Amino acid sequence: MNVPNTNNDAEIRTTDQLKTTISEVVHTQKITDIHTHLFSPPFNELLLWGIDELLTYHYLIAEVFRKSDVSYQQFWSMTKAQQAELIWQTLFIENSPISEACRGVVTTLNELGLDVGSRNLQDYRDYFADTTVEDFIDTVFESANVSKVVMTNDPFDPAESPVWESGDTGDTRFEAALRMDVLINSYEDTAYEHLRGLGYEVDPILSSEKSYKEVRRFLETWIQRMDPKYMAVSLPPDFQYPDDGVLGRLFDNCILPISREFNVPFALMIGVKRAVNPQLKMAGDGTGKADLSSLEALLRENPDNKFLVTLLSRENQHELCVIGRKFKNLMIFGCWWFMNNPSVIEEITRERIELLGLSVIPQHSDARILDQLIYKWKHSRQIIADVLVEKYQSILDVGWTLTHSEIERDVNNLFGGNFERFLNGN
Ligand code: HDL
Ligand code: ZN
Image 1: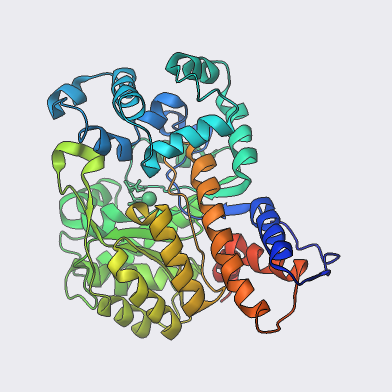
Image 2: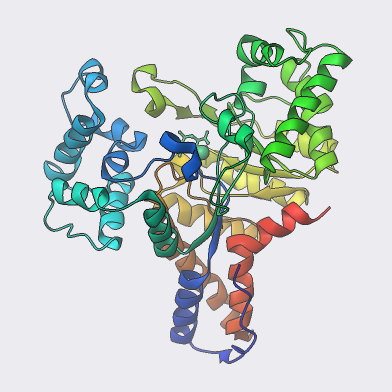
């Protein structure tokens, strides 16, 4: 994490000085990317990188069906290379790549120094074939100016658990998050059997003190194994709390006590409707507006717990900011998934600063493919910088004075300091 340079105390007076300072500070500030789906090399095939992965990102899969007459069955029977070629031809050659997901591929290739004017997919494939994943990780972290990424780690995933059990997860720039979607959203049909198979004496509907104790033991085991920055879950728009079912019993008797005991915040990602169109597979999820009175109750009833929250519906964003004003144990983060588009990032960032000042984590990348760190952060840095210029200008206009080091301090907090302090504060 950059330490602000206290020698930069020259006063900023003009709009040009302000724009130059903010551009330089925002683009040179190293970032802690608090939510990604990236993996360090020991996770092998879970670490996705290269042009064919970029082109078959599920965002682009959703988009190609809108322009191509390929059927779901035809597409899913193709190899990844064939899928990538179809997406390249359809969305980049037969149509201009101006959607955010398409534009991101072009930005990434350009930032890697490749000739996007050639539109030669084989040339891009040759570039990736000529590099190692370890070298490419260095290239991407340097180009994106990212210091650390937080992974999404699923203790129920058989592809992940052996790596954790080996004790070697490799590159320390990749930190862990303990994802609990299976435990919380699929306890009765999946997690119960899995836990029993591991020797945890839990009951089918999680209704006994013994079961609560055993789930806490499971969480403790994985916290000690992963050293996660936070525990996380994605939840549907109709998430309810308090809840007298399995979710409520998991929250109140297992997750929230453990979160306090180990000082590991709980991240709630609310508003996802899974498999709205199952034929799109991972690309088939949708969004819905949530009733945030449940979030208010969770924050109010658990003042000693720390919650990170991001919401998937644009219609929930303003009320989330208001809730943020009411609860200091809430840290709002990111422009998640369908929010991660310039028009919405700008709107959300502006209303967050207006209502919450500098007490938020404005963005995460949600990158699934390593290369995406480059475009997701290049695009977001520019938008955040533009909003900051507007907000700092508004106080310069009324006589406030500003220095370079004060802006460095503020941006350092937005891009990592707020996260570190939220994690480490008790
Ligand atoms: O649940 C999540 O963490 C989401 O981010 C999903 O993984 C989603 O598929 C995604 O990649 N969004 O960007
Ligand atoms: Zn995600």
